[in-house]
Image (tube, rainbow, N blue to C red; front, side):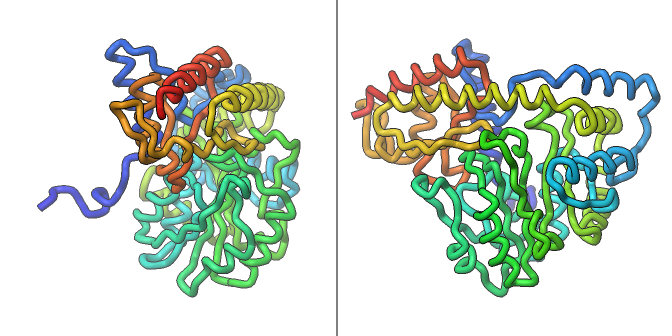
Length: 397
C-alpha cells in the first residue's frame, strides 16, 4: 500500500519544471546546456519596483497583510483594469495571491465539485489539468490545429458542453502557442457560454502585456457575460517578477470572497514586501514593460526566421507571449541509427541529450504533435540553440 495519498499519486510533476531540473543536472555534470524550457523572462525586475520593496522593508511592512491583499494594492489592480481594459471592478472583487497559479487553483477549488467538467482547449498550460485533478473535476479537451492558429471555434465549444460542465479555462495570449484571440473571436465564444447559465470562464491573461498586435482583448469586456468571468493575471511575465510571487483575480464578489476563504486556510496573504513592490509595478511607469515586449518581438522574429531553415517544422506566427510551438510530426519514425523518434517526448529528449538544448514536449500541453521553445533568453543563446538543434535534426533519416 502506498504511504502517499491517492491525490498526490494522481498528480503529475510539471513537465516544464521537470525539463528544467534535468537540464540543470546535465549542467552540473559539465555540459553546456541552453535552457529554453521555462517561461521566465531573462530581464531583471525594473529598478523602481525593487526600490519600492526596499522602502517597504524600511517602513516596517513585516506583518500579516489582509488575506486578499492590502486595500491600496487591490485599488491599484482595480485602477489597472479600468485604465488598461475599460473594466469596472471594486477592490472587493480583487484577490491578491502568491502568483497566477495559486489564483487559478483558488478559483477551481472554489467552483468545481467532484465529477463536474472543466473544458480545456488544447494545447493548454500544464497546470490546468493537474489543478482540475486536485478538485476531482473531469477535464474535457477541445483539440485545435496549427492551421487554425491553435484556437477553438464556437461550434467546438458548444459541442463540448454537457449538463456537467462548470468551467472553461483558456489563456490569451496563450501559453504554449502564443496565439491571441481577437475581440470578435472572444465575443463569439462568449455568446455560446451565455446560453449556459451554470458555466463560468477562467480567462488567464498573465501574458497580456507581451502582445505583439497592439491591443489586448479580454472576454470580460462583454457585459452579457462579465458576471461569469474570472480574470487571472499577475506580475511575473510583464514586469519580470517571477520570484516575487504575485498574482491576482478580478471576479464577481461572491467568487472573490470564496477565494479569500480558501486562501485563508492554505497560505494566508501574499508576501507583504512583494505586495508593496506590486503597488509600484501597477501604479508607476510601464515603459520598462513595453521595452521588454519589443525585445521579445525581435526575438520571436529571429527565432521564426532561423527555424524556417530547419526542414520539416510547421510554424504559426505567435502574436504574444514568448514561445514558439512548432509541429514536428515530420520527424516521427526517423532515426539516427541509435535513437528512433516516435513521439514529441522522444524528440525533446533527443535534442536535450544530443544538442544540450532543453525544450518541452507538446504532450505536456495536450498536443502530441508539437514541442515548445521559450525565447525568453538572449539572442546569442537563441542563435546557438537553434544551430545545435538544426545540426542534430539533420542526423535523423
